[in-house]
Length: 392
Image (tube, rainbow, N blue to C red; front, side, top):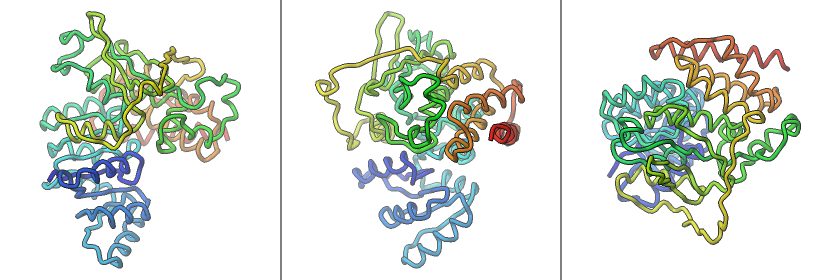
């Protein structure tokens, strides 16, 4: 039995992971499940999967969960806070760690899993956005196996030749074609974007995702973060990554080779496919996803992204070129701006402005250790909150 910790088990990726695990009960055991403050969700999962550990990032929520678990007669250790998350990410009985905590909050437990040499199923792109160099150095030092879960990066991984860790040129790859659905507002004008609501932004046409990542998809910041992540995962430069709008979300990404070949990974938009791939790698196993019917799809469309209407994508390219702490600032400012939009404190079209103003206020292009990055993240959040307040 492969022991599994799911960091963020009540989110969409965590729920999909448990669905795949439940289909293979003789191969995987969910040893530890974690959530931020969703006591009801984590308690239900504990009743079904009977993990040895349950962790709530929020301390008050942990107390409530512990009370409910004891009342139900379940023998599950309840832990709290970042320390609890780090502990279950590094347990001896854990083989694989699904890193699916949303945002920069997932950085420290993911690093703990890497330092412990676990197989990391990375669904949290912000980990590499905030601390790409530090994280990849830790992976190499520990011998941990890092497998991408984002559908696009998982697709690129499946299309890459062996040895891509040496860079694209030595293995005959010319560029990565990173597909994007374009989100719910792909065809709206900039004027039409001004008054869109959180409900509209969260209504993704193809994928069932959490609210934060749904907004990121609508602004195309999600694709910008994925460009940064891809640079670290595939040892490449941003100019070797082309974003391609593909509204059907059937081709999840492509790899172009120097001989003119283009390899693509296709499938229905279902996160259980990349999750099952990473769990079983280098083998394959059933995911529960409905097989792709090309005759039903019938057509595949492609467009260039419009960075005038969706400036967040251009901002992401800018910060990866700048390097240093700029990606961490970008991520922190985006998290603050998106949260303000979801709380109706900020217009959709002001999200990019808050991020750009925060980047301008903190031109940190030097190198940082972990504590320096965490400090920079905190400073960026304060500046971004001030920018939001000035617009209310």
